[in-house]
Image (tube, rainbow, N blue to C red):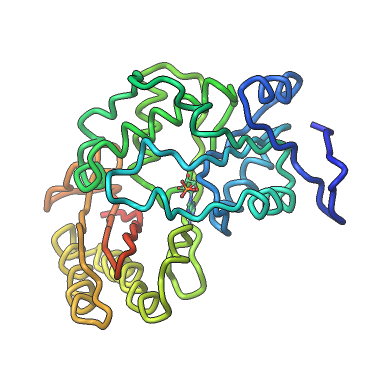
Length: 293
Ligand code: AMP
């Protein structure tokens, strides 16, 4: 892609911002090898790391910015989710992204009673149990983005471990010809996983929230003792954090098989994911780490 706009800022080439499938199709007509980075905007260092991986692997990098109503449950933060397309476009410019696809909700979901992608049994576990319908919403929008952008590869963060596992399942089960590339979790200097939702945290809430990454680190250190030792070590940190002010209210801590997200039995050997979800104040946070047992 060589397209630029007249607003190009010094040192960074502005990406082309497209809003509709037709504009997108025209913009990608001669794109060559294409990488897609799906996001909900409010772009941070974690998103940047995905863009860099995409940039290294493709001729054209497309970043989608779409706060997907289908993956939010009633009472969740869809309305207050941070939105700033100008700031996001600037981040994309700095990361040499070619195209920002930022469709309107009505463009993505014109039909009232639409067909969706069923996330199956894995989609009902952990995050899916806490947020019913969440992964149907995620997989439906990801499938649409794959069909609209037709990327050769798509980059997803391991921050959302169950999401990337389900996307891998979907492309395998539905024969979608796209390579899924995983990106390591990017953390802020205090250990908290970078997230668009971190802006919701007050200073004291942020201090309490550090317990999530500390619990995962404690679990990882206990790996030589086996699955039960990992769970016990991580829970000990979270039990302490439940007494903090403000408290960390645990939703789940689970040690699971990375391919299915079913609980790893006590004798489990090999790869596992230690995943945590908790609420600090009004903010729900998730984090995870890979562990070899
Ligand atoms: P979101 O905008 O939160 O839907 O995230 C868009 C993509 O960025 C997803 O693939 C996330 O897993 C990924 N992502 C978000 N935060 C991080 C992070 N801290 N490290 C790595 N990837 C991330």
